[in-house]
Image 1 (cartoon, rainbow, N blue to C red):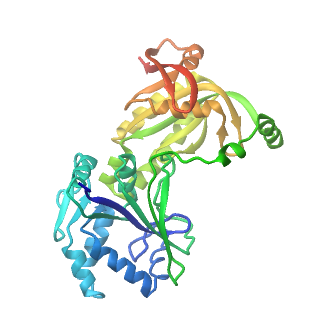
Image 2 (cartoon, helix red, strand yellow):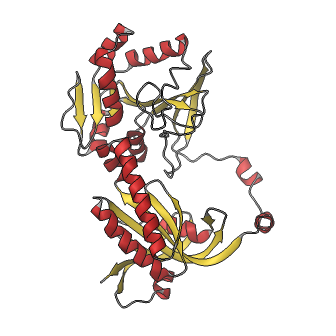
Image 3 (cartoon, rainbow, N blue to C red):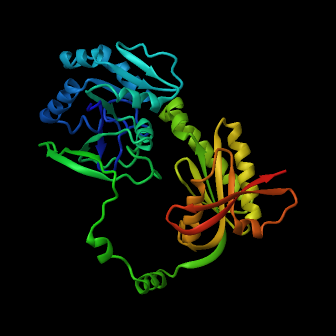
Length: 380
């Protein structure tokens, strides 16, 4: 049995933005960038894609935009009729009903239900835009093909198709097509094996080259405590709230994160999309910041997890690097919701009668040599 093919398609600028290709709202007023470029040949391809699809899968925001436009669209009446009649699945944890013609609401176990949709004998299930939904589809390995229409436009702001901080996903190019307008269609399918070539070894840096580069960059190295946090089920909450409200919540999250770090005399390095990276001169400060911030985001109805490691870091102009940062990042992957996990180094350097540590066992961290003793930190 072949099964349903799940296809992700999007209008995308050269800098990866997919927000407001038509006259829907853009946060900086930069909408309709795709319509300004599109010609007859582009339009014909997009039209054919709708007619060859068996059903559409949309995120809440995309669904609301389409449901506002297509029922009363007056341009291509045949296309409008097709869009209104085709089966449509909308993914949302906040909508109570999907009233547009032939629409079905998917909530609850969203990605389990989508996986079951793919078990049907055949057909094309096409996702238009919907970057938050696509993020979850990527995490659950549900995408079979990508059809990305790249427009000759650099927009400078807006929601990107693929959010910062996701895991690496390798793709295999199936084909390209260039339109007279300058739009390029790139068709890919997932490549499940990590590609490699002789150039990986040929251009690998020697230790001498690394040392030379570091000397040229005048990198400062210091001992510091690294704190990573991220939000639990951020994809689900984003689907529930929609892009605009989610963005506002993340902006508030970032403000509170900066305040917490400053209160504990740390350095806020950067937002990681749905979390933060910060450094401290003592592990006790990092721990107390993590506990405080966890309580703060709980009041926003958000779940959080955190990871802390103490080691040598490289100070850069606006960032930090080094093995300690990599260890803390990989450590975060092991944390469960509401947990603050630390390495043995943090345990050895921490003082405070109200701080407790429970051994979690010895684990291997992805890409980091050796076994690491992990502990769950708590405050009494």
